[in-house]
Length: 510
Image (cartoon, rainbow, N blue to C red; front, side):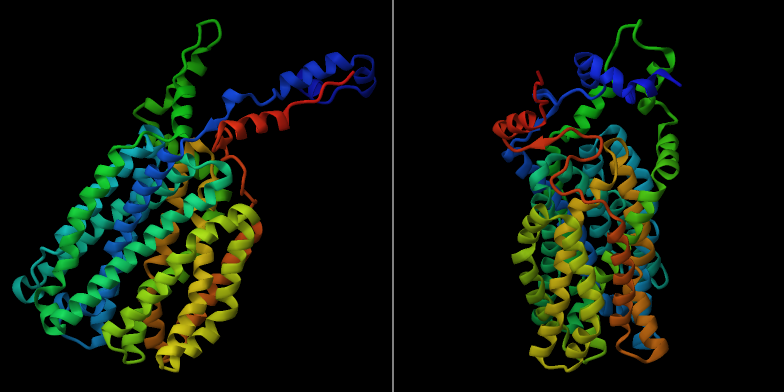
């Protein structure tokens, strides 16, 4: 038997004869936690990090939101001719195009963020997103340049999608690695607070412009204004991100990788491994390692994100189109109802963050998934009644289910992966799922309604997604109030660090 096994499982008689030796051996194999092993966070720095990450996320969903809320108008500007349904399908197909390249963006930016740092990559994704959004507002219409108009629109959407591939995984990793263990859910919820803020800004701007300019002017040139605003917003987010330091977890990881030992302690193989992250083959090695070593967790991540994205896009992106096309609601009225729903979600989302810190990620996620599974049909039956009260009640039921997911996912997903591959693994898993399920949601629902003639298809699609989510949550490990895998414990105060060390210190035995 190898020596390591004999040390791990000593003979019980030997343990009785040499208790002091046994305790010394246990301390060597499992050294006690020291104060220097714990990261004490600076709340001011954490808040700056959260603000920068959340603003970037708001920018991302502002860009995607304005396209969703202008889908009917964009269909008429870039895809004239054919029926209204054909125009809408063409517009949503272009919306989905951006999601086709998101896995490529995640595969590129994610491992890059694990090698050169979260901060630099998040700054790059912000610049690309802002540039792509701004350029959409400059594209001439189909009436001006013909087929080149939708071609240029697709190219801009591809740039947006590629940059977005590195955004969510990096932003959620950034916040998770800055936040103390016991408040990771609370601080993580601000990332989705940014999502709702971006959606609200987009919906509010589109509603104001439509009401002020009227539909003919919006189709002529008014639709460009929200896209052109995206450029300056991106510069603000870039400024905030560049002022931040790297996360404590990444700094510790880099210090360990580049630590110089004496020649007597390090073999050539160990030295090569220490600097492997700097080699020219590092990108391929990182991606290969993610798929070969992290594939069970990747599958779990894809299932969680798929269920979450379908329900999210169904409610926050597709619903205004549903109210307009299926229930003949005025564009402005449908956006105002959605604005009110999202404002309510924003008011409670940080409380959901507190709750999942206290009671755990799994109970909140299971509540959200179960809500969509049980309440989707009643909610859409209410919405179909057509009255404002019924529509608000139906959307409110779905919104309360969604906020349980929104306020929890940004803390739960980064905790699935270890520090050295967290950004890459999360970016790849998240964007594969978002590409397959999230961005296609408006297109799939519109096609299903057209094919079946049933306006209840959004409810059935949400229920199927929620069922997958319920199974995925059941297989999750609870990570609330625990250190991130591969990272040291993170606490908010020095006193908490001291108490943590004392709680894990071994009691002397005489």
